[in-house]
Image: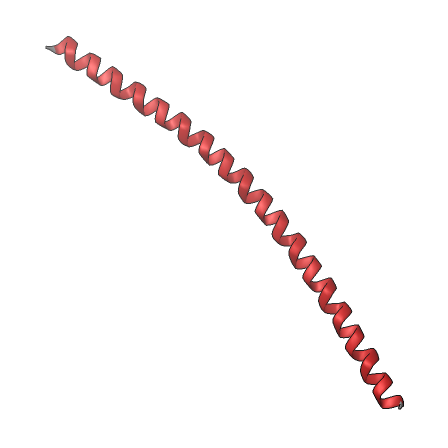
Length: 69
């Protein structure tokens, strides 16, 4: 009976170790995805700011052309 309980405990420990390893791998993958998304977000913010400044420059030029005529 004690031997059976020990074997069950060993199996459960092995399952927990396997689960821990899978979770560690998943966590690493998620951290990688997070880093990529942060980088992509920064790039999109930069592109948005560039587009905004171009539009503002066009508006300024149009206003100055309108005032000149």
